[in-house]
Length: 174
Length: 444
Image 1 (tube, one colour):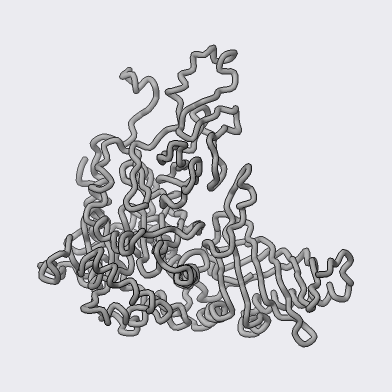
Image 2: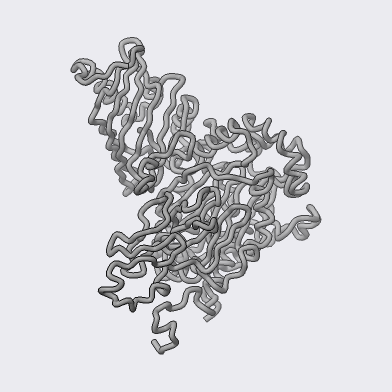
């Protein structure tokens, strides 16, 4: 594992562009194309956050295997997309209008096999029907596996900032 | 005074006045007459494995701390400093012997006792009655096969009487295998902009909405059971054990029909556990009944096959905080538990492929209750009215309670009737005026 104290600008630029395009595919509802950015052995996980104090501070993020907001593989993530595309997913009929703003992109590690460990923050705005409007914030840790001259996302950990989800659902993707 | 609320539910027609979902005064009365009186679910004993473990939750709108005291018994107290009312615990869970108020430093043991008051000698001149300023305890706390309940009402019936025959039916979850159930660690918490009664109504008896509400999930790989495709006609009942509780169940004649209701990934497990369940529960509860959904009065809901258990915390007439856990047979192998947990997480809860569509429906139904004209038109709860099973014992001699057809709103009607009974009961308030003046019998 090589520590990238000074990641090269070109790599950072390409990763940034990859994540921005991914965000656009979500905002444009191009979810089939979006799915193609993930590997078949994907782990897509969003733990639950709890308020902890004192010695228990370290337990703020729930461990893998406990109750989670998302605990998906490629099949279940694809099925979620399939559901949205049935035209009968009533909570997304008509679909939400979203803006995924991705920032603070950092390449934390370049593994010997070329896999990148990338952290980024997100701020997602969602407007639905007449009055529903919500902001979702958090960060993601992505493991990007080289694929052709781009990458595929092998693993995405999403750390959401809220302990009680104040939005009506997490029926969108991050 | 009696007879006001019972008129909001017209049992001749199955009409329900929509104002019960939107009227702020009715909501306030619910806090007094429903939530301060009833046994409310706190969680499961498995959430407090060690001495001094605690978690916080709500009873009605009141925040409470649930602790396993040093002696191993479980206590439950208002999360409120007796001085100014500050929360003495800001954590969702943890391990602590004492809770110290962040305002002035009053400190309470996890048995509720006030153990330290800064300036007790110099400022209060040792006059402050420490014993009278403990954290406010619940009136009663008890558990049923691991499910922890408490009530603020000293006059409440025992938990066993409160649950009545529902407890016997809950055994289909809690006692079908040796060791009962455990909760997967963690809880989904989210806000729903609807009245708390909409989700309870949905879970207690609405087998009707699935083929429409959840069709997108069922056709996309998130099925609940394979025999869904038979539409509205499949065999089963809405069971009403009384007390405002209820559930909907499928009916299986024999083992093969039980297995037909299993998703392929769970079939081996179902085959392995069925004989044990029949042996523990008898044929009615172990073989014939395969429950799907239900509610425990007032605000707990369950999905048997979905492995989900919920509390709907009332936050206001149009705001509810949903808490969702995943329960699993303790004796099940780890790979089954993992598969079952994923089944639950991907269908029910914050990102649930079933959940989202339910929530939007409840939100819209609620908002209809706010329109003046809309409120002139009652909700319709007439399904199955006058069409109950005359003699449930002819279906099976062990059946307890009333029985409606599988598509019937018998349970919703019984829920609102129980609600109205309690709302019309103006006898003793569950929690009287606790000012010292009132407690000493002075006129207030």
